[in-house]
Length: 440
Ligand SMILES: [Zn+2]
Ligand SMILES: [Zn+2]
Image (cartoon, rainbow, N blue to C red):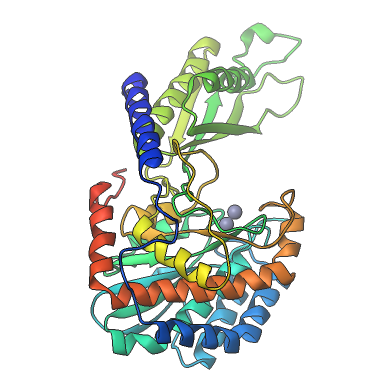
């Protein structure tokens, strides 16, 4: 087990220097040293998105009305493919060995930028994460940017990725080689409120699932309890141990769990009991260190109850911490500003904890952007609520759909048009450690 203190001291040092950097530089969020594509091309994108808007809104509404869970997005993927095909792009579900993944592409060779779509929903609350808007934004951006690819050179793809919420579809596509010839990837995620995320403010945590099953010995809970080894006691001890650990973890760490099996009946000493924990962190090293500490707590609970712990940890986390590429995000922000949106300054200070996305895994493999855009909901209405699903198809959600599609298309053609921008994107990616795959 690695010494968490080393990881934590390194984190403290990085946070302090990040705060100092932010305080000393702080450029405007939309400033970029790179010209990108010409103004006429950006204007053409705005016109094309306006033309496509009724069909994109129709797609977002249709997905909202018939939400499908991860890996079951058959109707959604078919709808997206149908719209792409009707607009002259060849796309069929079933890419990368996944029934509900999609791939469409224009142009040849490099540079190759991939626009990423998601379209899975949440159980019971539908499109409460707004992936119906992500699909519309991605399709709109791909169709609006595609006519410019031949002139600019290189290649533009749309990659439809299943099961963001419950399966880490992007990690599966990475394993299938779907990103091997991609040079950069870009997507947009809706959020609550009416503002876009700051350029440097879209970091997310990585998450690793840790499942534990305790094996004890059954006995009559009143007749002969001394013969029993209580697996539920082990789960409860483990749960309490994780709660005690929680005080001493980093601000970028999270750990939370549920009891998935608590025994069969009160008059039987539980022979088997189980729990599932999500271990999260904003940094790779810290994610490894926290996993080790949680596993130690789970083992300790077995020791103290005389049970046996069977522990299963994701060998490769389906969600790694997101590392957004700032150089490319600036071009998204600049395009949004042209459409009248105000992009806030990046917050100074250390990385924050929060939710996770499988786009994190992509962002460690190729330079990626994953900015979010407010859908006009009141601050109390945030993702993963039924109210948020409802807001995705109101005026604010549909305005974010059009702005998101146009700004993403603009960022894509800037990337293809400007070799110096691409060099800056690659340099930033290399400075953060370059191409990375978690060794399971
Ligand atoms: Zn979500
Ligand atoms: Zn989401």
